[in-house]
Image 1 (cartoon, one colour):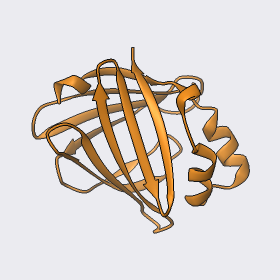
Image 2 (cartoon, rainbow, N blue to C red; image 1 turned 120 degrees about the vertical axis):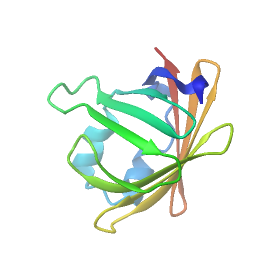
Image 3 (cartoon, helix red, strand yellow; image 1 turned 180 degrees about the horizontal axis):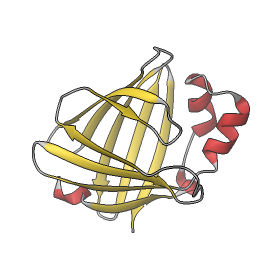
Image 4 (spheres, one colour; image 1 turned 45 degrees about the vertical axis):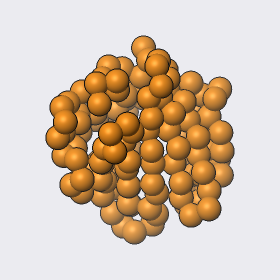
Length: 139
């Protein structure tokens, strides 16, 4: 897990299928448009049983920074930067993070993998039949 420790920033140019993913998740068009323009940053820490995550949106100073502590394999309720709540589970398979996120109101559920390779982190999220691909670079 140490390969993930530190700060990462989204490389928006390498994002694939974000519009379709947000539509599948039920985002209204105007909300999705603003969401796509966000410059996300995440910072990871922790040990073998827990991972700490700090999430912020660099180009939206009015949005709060969120800090989470995930115990591997345990579902917790988290609140996103917009105030939305999800039931989230993070686990570790020895090389990558496997995540499940479910809207508290049941509106959507998606699975995500995060895999670090050098100074890039590859994130693949799936909701229904729609796949989102993102790349984060180490800061």
